Image (cartoon, rainbow, N blue to C red; front, side, top):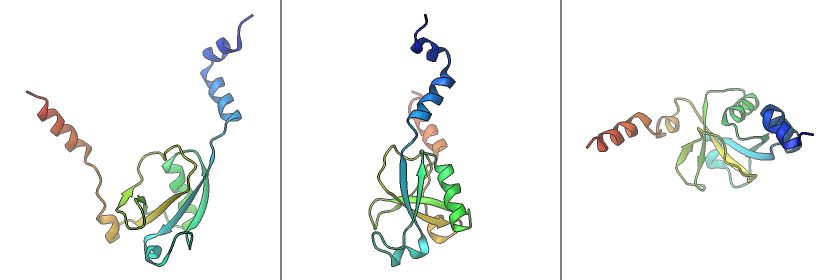
Length: 132
């Protein structure tokens, strides 16, 4: 008789479905605010709360867009109350801590000042440095 682990090893889709059914992603609380309201709030005040499962930034943005009624924004996190905004571009980290997000409208002054890494430039510099 074949063991269960051998059956699961041959059927990775079954295993991932089993794991997902038995261990669903944990619920996470996201608090967000638009940049216009940022100066008028303190911790725990006026932040809109949304709960989400998983780590997908794209799905989180879609969920927030439905709540606010527009989708032309960049989601940012900051280090502390007065920290520089950092665009949220990749999947959320594995954590259940509440995440505070600031929504910057596209083409706003704050959005235009965001710094995005130029991956091509980094690659070119690395290639030039390693050509010797």
